[in-house]
Image (tube, rainbow, N blue to C red; front, side, top):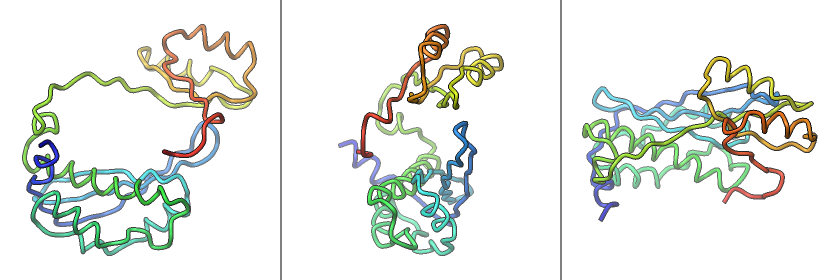
Length: 197
């Protein structure tokens, strides 16, 4: 069973810290997230809390005592210790933020356990590694213009984009995007779906 291979990975946790990540987006708002850093045996694993609400991030960054998660054992033993704490100093803005924050700890712990065992996830699960392509996620501003995309392409000609649809797009916007062809990998119609799951 694949889960058993992950669950039984040895894991030593000596220290946990939180590091803020703040990025001013092209839309003019600051995207806040927090990196969970778990250290053990001279190595570090990382995960990222991606809760959108700035208040949830600010409160999380003030958490100082995560010592209940420190110790040895296995990955699943770490998860059991994680079950025993509430990583929200105050109730979250949205219930799904509990899952996002838990995933930050789980992914950091798994990253560390794999590093400590000197294996990749693919090796552990006996899977072939397949190529993954990444895209840059940008908005076009208001009024919409492809100038930011073109500036990035001047620096990184192979770059591809995920862009967010906006109501102020017009025929000229569509023409400019079409001119960029396969550089536009995804158009995200966020306004037309609701919820996170």
